[in-house]
Image (cartoon, rainbow, N blue to C red; front, side, top):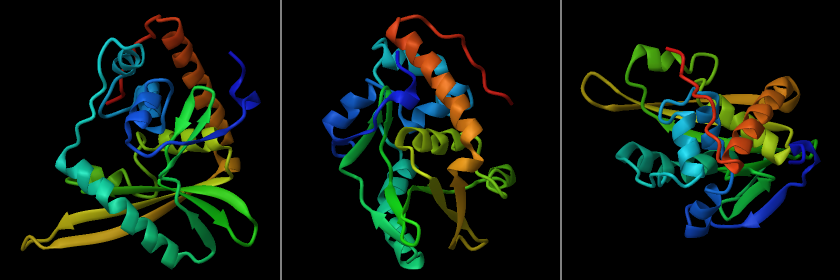
Length: 222
């Protein structure tokens, strides 16, 4: 297996959540897989992910109400970001999948910093924190299970930066909806060590998939 850094980045014309998109996800590691590989996903263990990749179990394609709401909210939040940040050209990549070796990335939008022509990406999160602890996960940082996704995208695309824009929905005493937003910037130079660490973990995991050899179980910290 060649080192990831020696592999070219391909741009495949595949629509988001099309049959071809779901098939491609079985053949590589996507951004939402990264936290599971590290053992810090809230939704899936690294062993469960391995079973999906080798075909022992079928990955779930079901979406709950909050997931559907988040998906529907992405496009208008991207448009609002573009209006509020004229320094960036915002590029629609919903019909594109980036691929580098076994790494794959479906991104919410691409960004070009007009003054410098640096390339970056935009990730949208629409969430409803239901506890003080859930809010604390966003206090000056993003939740640890979302961070590997950003690092994966930086690794796969080779771009210079990524912005995560989070929109929060909460409820007032009378049941009224209260919304707020926060943004988090990740510069490639500042997280380059984390990119290398994630690439090592992903390479080890994918080798286990190719050899059909179960990886060591990683348990999340509590």
